[in-house]
Image (tube, rainbow, N blue to C red; front, top):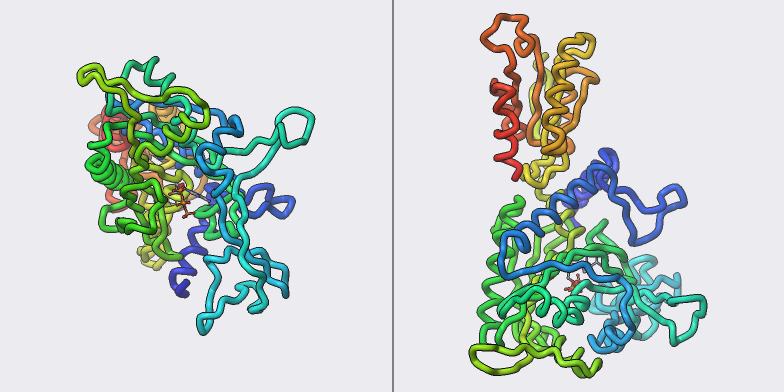
Length: 452
Ligand code: ATP
């Protein structure tokens, strides 16, 4: 990684820790490689992202319904899907320092791969390593009770296809959406939360007639690009990689990878794949149960094809953080220069929507009024009440967590400077730092219009 990019990434990681977005899992015990905890700000960011995805893809559409499947499923599911046989990454060991490495990600010098940990070229031959975490149901740890933590959310939507089709009474084309945890025992978790061993996915399986599959893949690509734009990741920042013939999964007729320019390089955010009838056919074969669709009008029975937009919550959260992070030089009240750190989140994604401050904390009338404003907004959005320190410092603290609006209650608000401005407040905008005076009565509608 180039030095500037590395520094930027380090600043983002440090901000995320300092301001309660992301912590190492089990940190007081030295952490656990590939696992992360989201703190008070991080959990809000992820919730806002998932809620918006759900609203856009389930609530606002007539043709998509949701489900929430179990993480552990019958082992036969993973036999049928091919994961038990082929969900492998090639692995090598360094004979010098015993590091376990992904064979396809080794650095090379003069076209000879070497160990990135110690530099040795003394590596074992590559062998397959299955990425599924194993466990057992019940007290006996034998092969009959072997189960896996799901490595993707998709399979539950295929195996419940018939139940959902019948209970929702949908007609093709229609989709099933799911958000949930997935687990992959990655050989080299890296790049912060980009590649971890426990993560969340947001997936849609969109079932259709075979002849519509290709066009719907392009349709979903466009939908997904709009989504990213609506959370603050512009189209120009996403590279569409049309995976060429021969490099796609053998069953896929078209796959687009959506890649974002992270500080550590262009990397996959989401895949939109036309998976044909591979999954439903495989489960029909393994289970012996019919999973076809009967078209009433055309009087024909067939196995639906499927288009799958599959996104990672954590990778999108990281892209949002990278996109939002900014530093700018500003002049303070006394003419001194300082660096302002800002997360320029889209308001609908920002963890806190509005900071609420009394101008002075030792004036009970200001404090009481500010607390009343906070209490009135709290049922409708995430607000943060803060009375500690100079007002400029309080603004900076909100800038650092990406709060788009701050409201200050001052002597005008409580009518000490005459009746004209009573019950009005200063609304300060994060990006421009511009301030305007607005009536408290208009506050909720103004903020809701921006954050919805
Ligand atoms: P990669 O090639 O980066 O390993 P993939 O192509 O195997 O990813 P998919 O199986 O298509 O990924 O999974 C769909 C999405 O799930 C990815 O686009 C990504 O956003 C997310 N995802 C997959 N693996 C991880 C991981 N280890 N950590 C975080 N997110 C992940």
